[in-house]
Image 1 (cartoon, rainbow, N blue to C red):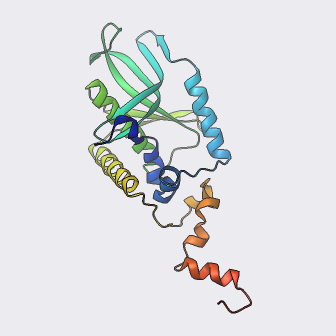
Image 2 (image 1 turned 180 degrees about the horizontal axis):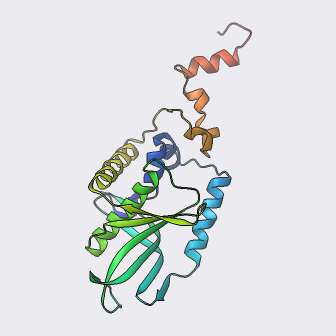
Image 3 (image 1 turned 180 degrees about the vertical axis):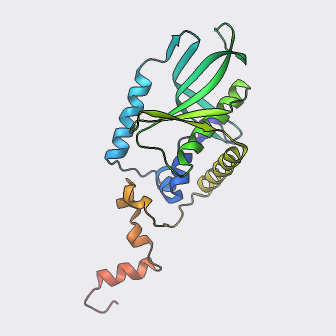
Length: 222
């Protein structure tokens, strides 16, 4: 039975959806490299968390850098922003009067994407909040800095099922210490780990033969 401090980072579900090999290089092999996009994203998250933990404006309570954990998903992490809005059908909050609805908001550096990577991370945050607060969260939001606009995300049953499946796969991979083979695609060009992953090398059917052919180029190998 895993202890809470041993749970995998919740944010890793985005990496896992984007590329399972990238996730494994980061979380299993503990390798990391940064490019402009990851550096800008990191700085934006730091600014988001540094604006103060709590802010109350009328019926809106904004909490930044809220730590969450899900024992069901065996994931833990930090929400960029959680908005609590006064709502008669909501939940009670310690130290606050009235009842409140819950909306997690995840900040992203780029633009909205077709794939589910960002939505899965948001969904995992919402599921952790539901587990902690004993509530239902039907929606979340993704804020994209490139367009300075939010995208509302319906946390459907299908998205939740996919979140549970990927969280289970992540934990299985980590327990095995398993790093998948490379699956090259357009995403490789934008990956900060491409120099560590070496997709052009790893996609060869026989990596050992590829290395030998370059080491012994022009001469017969032993």
